[in-house]
Length: 276
Image 1 (cartoon, helix red, strand yellow):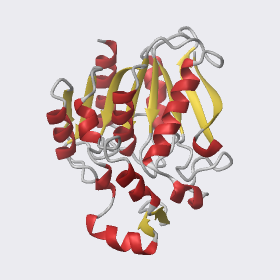
Image 2 (image 1 turned 90 degrees about the vertical axis):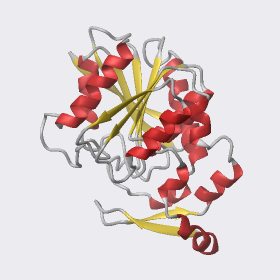
Image 3 (image 1 turned 180 degrees about the vertical axis):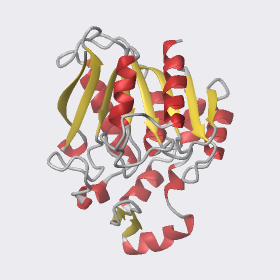
C-alpha cells in the first residue's frame, strides 16, 4: 500500500521546513528520490503529489519538501503567507536547506537507512541541485527538470542597477496576483559567491550520472539552458520532451488524477534512468 509520512526539518536560520515521504510499505528501504521545487513553488504544488505516488508505485521512496524561505509557512503550506521570509531567501540558504534534508534522510533516525540518494530538481531547484550534486558525494544520480543554467536568468539584467539603489525589487506572481519581493541580498549572494554559484562551472565537475530533461515549449527557461548544461557536461544524458512547457503542462491547482502526458513522459524517462 502506498503511504505517506510527514516531517518537519529545521532549515536555514532555524526556520522549519515541511517534508513528506511517499513510499510503498512493502518496500520501505527502496531507493530515495529527493525533489527540490522551483522558485514560487512548494512541495504540494499542482501534480507533485501525483508524481510522488507514481514514483512510489515504481519502486522508490519520494521525499519532497518546502524550502525554508519559499514564502509558505507550516500553517499555510500552499500559500505565500510570509513574503518577508520569501524576500530574505538566497541561493546559499537553499543549498543549506538541501543539505539539511539530505542529512535528515541519511541520518537513519526517522526513516529506514538510505543507501542511495537520487536528486530531482525543477527550475531554480534544478540549479540548486546541480551545485549540490557537484559538492556532495552522497548524491548518487541527478535528474534536472527544466533547470536554469544561471541564477542571473531569474531577473532582467537591466533591473540590477535600480535594484541595488532601492534594495528590493518586486515581480508579479501571475497565478496569485501577488507582488513578490526580492531583496538585493539575493543578488549580493551571487556576487559574493561567484565560483560556488556558477551553475555551468559546477555542471562541468559533476561525476555522478546525470539526466537533463527539458521541454521544447518552455518559454520560462528556454531549451538553450539545457543545451548549455549538456555542453558543460557532455557525459550527461539530454532528453527533450516534445510539447512540454516549463511545468510539463501541469497547473495549480490540478484537479484530475491522471498526469499530463508530457509529465508522465518525464516520469518514465527519469525512472528508467534511475533504475539503470
